[in-house]
Image 1 (cartoon, rainbow, N blue to C red):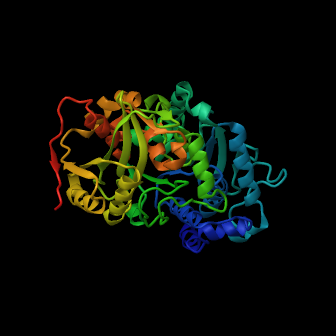
Image 2 (spheres, rainbow, N blue to C red):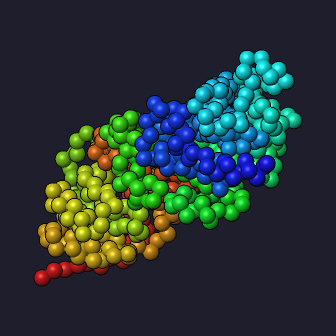
Length: 479
């Protein structure tokens, strides 16, 4: 009989079809299709440990904590599922929504074997706002708030949805510590060898539960569907949907750079405005790249200026070409006054190919009245420098090989960068990506994805005489 049921369940609808059937009002975007397909792989046991981070108001909880438990109990009425959130009331709200789905006629048409107590009957089965049992089966759904008790309950699948209420909670070391202790001493002790875990969050802090687990356990970034087949038994599969796409397209997220995840709900223009208000918070909540303000190298300490002074002694440029395919070309033109204060005037910060950025940099040099430019020759920089010199013949272009340790240079020059460099007021609006990457740059070097902007600021400080050992420079001359 059990084999017949197993065979029959293979013909149950896909999770996305189930979602449309039960919630016909859902607005399903392309990323939802990926999300729902991934949740189905989790429901059917292809994935045992799954992390998903997603911006607010993008439907993460509807999929993971409302529709998914109902679907999983339909596939296997003997499964014991637990939903946890930052409060018992929110977890119970998810539980009640699941119960309403299960008792609906549409659900019964799909999963006839999965039924729950209606009214007072059958009287021997439990149905409350925090726990419900499946009739004639061993399965059920339990909901609990963070730090709540699960004594005596075996859990086959744990769904952890937003264990922190807001930034204030996530920024509290005490709450983060209590959450970790609850996870290790309560959640993990209720699980067995075949239990599965789903963590779905809006990220608030780099040391939240996801951050702590990523430090301690092996995590596989989900870029292609084949990644599921290569998972080890204890590996986490990690999916982060950024509100604004950064990096090249992937099979899982084929958006181009800068494209919004759900433009009809939150456009790229709206998201950029939110980033300008608080880049650190935006990187956490909307991009899934959290930083602790206490762990930032620069933070919001950059000085700004309204007008360039009249006592300018030189106008120069420093350029770092992209080292890898995912890196940025960063080129900054600046003016230096008689006191040695450096004023950034123009910037090219781009991941476009060199044939594009050569022209962009050359035009910037001519437009900013730059007299000399220094270009790092690493990884194709020499050819780039020659092309820029050809396009801007009045600018004195030099190139050199940067042999200094990048980490040591950036960290040791950081205080001088803050003290000596000024950015124009409203630079967040002019160069939003540059602003975001600099103000969220972390002291822990390996935690940073991009070093290009910080590297150029350090190079400017070194070029302007704030160093002992001057780099060896080669001059390009054209006849």
